[in-house]
Image (cartoon, rainbow over all chains, first blue to last red; front, top):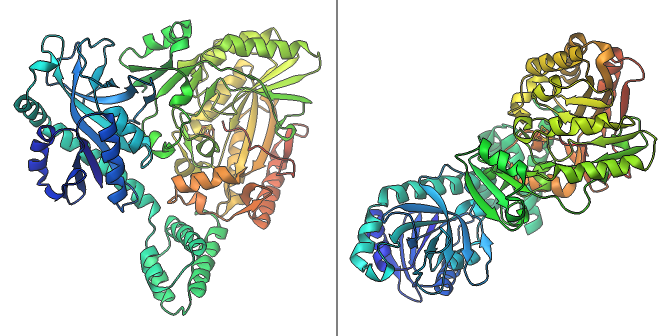
Length: 270
Length: 341
Ligand code: SF4
């Protein structure tokens, strides 16, 4: 699952159409969804971006989600329409910094994104300037590891084309020009989130917990035993067939443990 | 190889940082106030980061030398370790660094001069032999072309003949050593598991053949070598595999070049082990027959005892007496895992 946080409807429109996202909520934020993508319109500013991120996390049941903040930004030197992935996000007021984790080859140049409270006109530090990324990072850091939290910004204004000259139609155009890259980024982040899920969700866990009642402690023990069973390359179907004869949760747990320990004690195959 | 450099603002003008930036001219440079903002903060995924680690350049502050637990020594009374670098180019599944750090980025502390001062100050305190271990939080030589660590520290130890430096490695990066006169007080210690396990447990580590070739060159050049069989791995047919490993190594190396041989069993603080199993729940090695004992995770007692006894016996058939330091079985006072490298 991936969650997209976008400040303005015009920044999201092209992507909504491309991903065929349906509207599923209007308040307190507009939310669109389809398959494994959710997109929320946060409104402008760090506080709104943080609130929308936390709100979306609260509505989601998935264990592992990727988070992507999309939008436009100003930059002193970069040309209009250039796409940038943040390697550092700074809150211009507090000076606090976050560093999204680049576990993949970035599809575009990376840059520092400074989140300001008013549209930036001086573009001082050779960084990209936006108004949401820091708020988004503050909130998203509670819900995912940094390798799954990213900010993608398209340059909408610079010293030659100041921010007051940018209108909604231009923003929509700029974002449309980046659909292919954004789609690639979404795929990459979703693949990473799926890999994390696959590593941690052992086969048979849902089947066993649906069939027998386990306390929280026993469930955790069972999950690790099933992970070990899988890691040791043991036959899941054969185990499942044997487990059908177990009448209690405890007997099932013991049966898995016996099989896992017997194989583990034999040593790694040479 | 390195395409991102995170650099502490305080070391931006350090000559070593200038040299590294010149070495990686295309790398993206990201500045930070303190390396901890990137390196060990919460909510990072070591396994994901290991796909694409960055190099962090920082200054090491505070205590630069730490006492090393006596049982990791090679016969000396004063044992210290120091870490000019955190993390490693390789990816060994049994490595405690994965459990100790949240981050897989490489941190290089560029203030070598401070480490050298600390070592010299320590060296001046007694004329008795002192031992300094460098491969605790990293592999001492794997990133030598980048760090120049051995190249820079060898002259220091030339001036401190009563102090021994142990470089612990699995790499074949020996050029700096071959360019230097051999020093009798430097031990280049290589660690091994049977070759059949290398591809599965030690990603990126050069083959046994390549390491033996490097060790042979070092021996010819006059360097003293250490052999570290640590951790011993519980594998089917372990006696045959370890006998094969020992015979190949001892057949390839001149016995007079061997300074010390040690072996040790797998042990790791429980908290690290749990963290690693969460990172690699699908790994067969971590699914092994482990048990908790006094806060450490190790093989179940019976397995550990047999593995250790068998390997020790086999090793004694090859290793000249006086060179074997077999005392890395876990003991009640053990509070640190074995050196990583
Ligand atoms: S065990 Fe040594 S070589 Fe392997 S990853 Fe750890 S430090 Fe590197």
